Image 1 (tube, protein in one colour):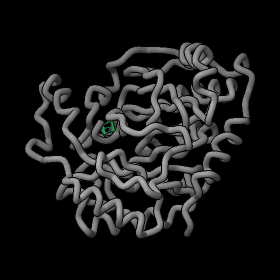
Image 2: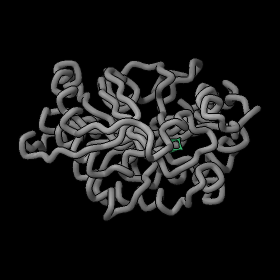
Image 3: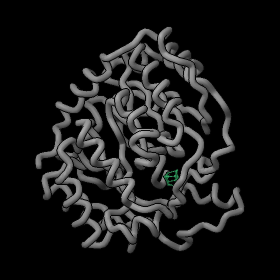
Image 4: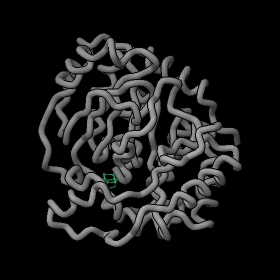
Length: 301
Ligand code: SF4
């Protein structure tokens, strides 16, 4: 199947964002968040306000934000608090399809809060983006959030079920069901993939990634995230042993080789690797800037 075009996706983002309620009719919902970030250019189209929700059911070996995993840490805020911040920032966010991105942690574990934030964004004419691994379930979370979601950044972790469980601690079946839900709802998405030596970068790993990607009708492209150890200090601060101790980032040659394989397969590729070829490399949107180490909250940021 063909992947969705960048231009079609941007149009879709803007038109889905047009289905807006008046803010006064949107319920106030409390959520537990880790933090927010005001001006991101790497987590969806345009300039974005990021809400990092607290709590995650996965235990990824390469998690760069282990302090977001606990379900009880963080601070309580309401969707109306977030809406007030979005309203103040609206002039900076609205041009070029910008808006709000809910990341984590895992935003789908707080579906009513995320749905509330997304509805508030739409009421302001802002686009909504979900940075997720597809946790939760159809009736308890996806049915609440996805009707208000314009675009998804979907971190797939690994396409081999055994490796997926090894990396995350969870079964892969939920992730595949989430992909089917995106297909059913025709929601455009970017697939995020962390490239880790001898874990996700082998020939068979990349072949599985390509086969999966090409079977997704609303896929826009693949964001390749070379593994790094910038989050290791957070594991140290928590007193947790770092699972990938001694694993080095992938070589430049490896990153470029994988990028070429993906492009040769006809896929759009986004990668902020310093030596990545720029010709033909897709971006989230025409105005997104490039390098920022915060890319990939579920990856190696
Ligand atoms: S990388 Fe993302 S999905 Fe994995 S444990 Fe960390 S917050 Fe959860």
